[in-house]
Image (cartoon, rainbow, N blue to C red; front, side):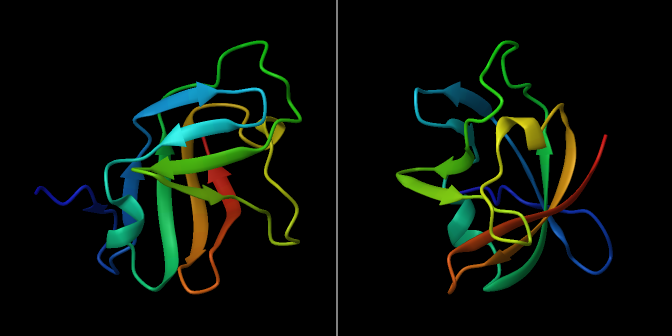
Length: 112
């Protein structure tokens, strides 16, 4: 299997590319490569490149989640509020903190 991560800097912050987006009645799902959560470190920073836009007209209050294989990872802000479509307004690179043990993925900031 090919490792789906590329190191974005010398310190080793992994970068993952979103491979697709699906809009449902209950959320917006960004598809990550197979086994993406398995290969992340126990905790730390991760860059996610959203190169696939959420379709125009999608309800701005729908929560956004990451999916990989049969796993779904909710995304929150640093105050633990759900990230919604309004928080990911465009394609670009977003910085997250991931804690595998605490099942936490927090949006820290973004660059477009």
